[in-house]
Structures are given as structure tokens and as C-alpha cells.
Image (cartoon, rainbow, N blue to C red; front, side, top):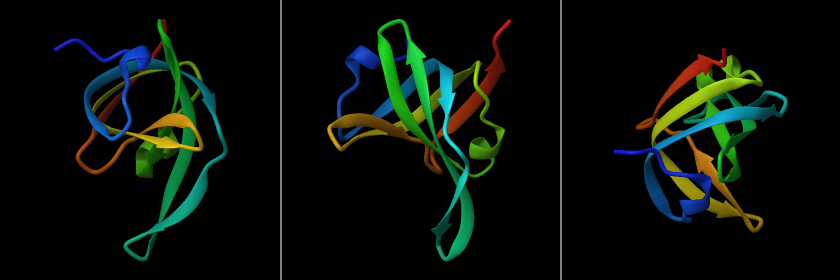
Length: 100
């Protein structure tokens, strides 16, 4: 199945596959998940049709770096403050690849 483009994303939907380039990383923060601290980071991914904000958790939040190509499977799309976001959760898989 071909990855979904930013242009085709819709709120309140699971997205099977999305690929993009990480164009912006916001500072790492900590959040409580099940009463345990967990790293969280907001990033911006772009593809040929636009850009979208993404919330990364755990080791993925730590490993994220600008310029990486990222492929995400089983990610949740939602709307916050009038913008679409993707949230990488426990059921998601994420692969980082450095651009050549």
C-alpha cells in the first residue's frame, strides 16, 4: 500500500503508512504516561504535498533529528488548534533513515 500524502490526511483516522522528511524539531520535553516520565517531542514532517506536525514519544522522541527521512505505520491523525497532527503511539512503528 502506498504511503498517504499530507494532502490526503483526515482527522480522526488511523493512517496505515506515512513517509516524510523531518524539517523541524522542537525541544524535548517530559510527560507522564501511566505515572512514569516519558520523553515527548513535537516535530514537523514534510512530503511533496505539504507538512504536518507530529508528536513523537519515548526513544523515537530522543532519536529524532532534522534532515532524517521517517516512515511511520499505524499512526493516529487528529486536529488540534485548527491544524492536523499525527501521534505515534504504542501500536505504531517508526523507521528513521538519514538522507543521502
